[in-house]
Length: 373
Image 1 (cartoon, one colour):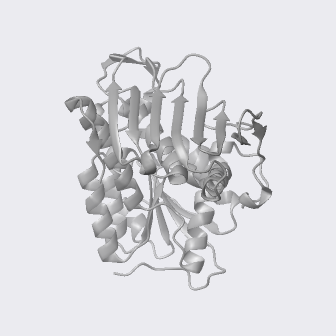
Image 2 (cartoon, one colour):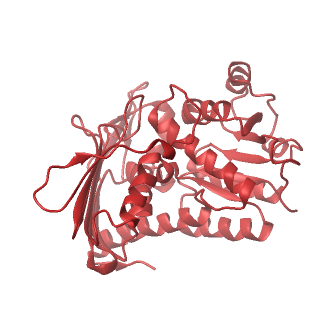
């Protein structure tokens, strides 16, 4: 079955949500209500009481009884998959089989091979597929990409990123219990490194070779509400060095459970200038905006480079910066549908990210440099 579209480009894209957890409510629901390109048409959740409360609070038109009801709903154009990573593959397959365009949060699945299968299935079905790697489309990152492509720093010599967050530390809420098992591919490295490395490398270009060290420092995780102590084997620290095109070098440090001084720091060194990108938050609350500083030449002070207003495509709102990044992804997808462009990240982009993380894990295990395909 081929994917269905609204009959007119002026009609909103009708969305069916799968899942109504914290990120769905904090991010997706608020974004979809902000953007006139979308209509929240239907919701299915394993928690019917929460789903019914969400419909009345957020203007979702209907709660359906089963996942099959949602993906086969005649007034749903786009299925948005917001359940947990171990549930993604089965949910996405149902949406594709129903001929629906499908958005899925990152991590796409728990394994590269499964994600590759979804790419092939979606392509055979002729449906559009989108993965939630929204940070690459943030205004600051599109501006950074354009600065680099215009030659602001000249030839890139080195790229360095450090990302730290208090999340995924020694304690977690009951709602995040599912992130503890390593087989669920939902650690700080899977989620945060995935989002930030995709953001960075979309702007700078991707490494060709990597050497990495991924470590698990928090051997147990305590569930706050119950005091239960669970064994943990998932990595919470990642160090990675690599080579990029034209002999540029890249260094990465990702760390979870940091108590103080958290955030994002990126340095890009070129043969004609330098850029520095910082944020005091790795998640993005209200006012947590990226600051870009740059200098061209030698021994010059770094000056703030304000992101031009043309990079902001959103209606005015008071939403947190991390949620606004998600809104930029939805704007890109709507424009892709309208014009036939391909700006929104796809399942194929998710596979590339899976392969990068796989290479880091392989390098850790084998203690050698890995060449990326």
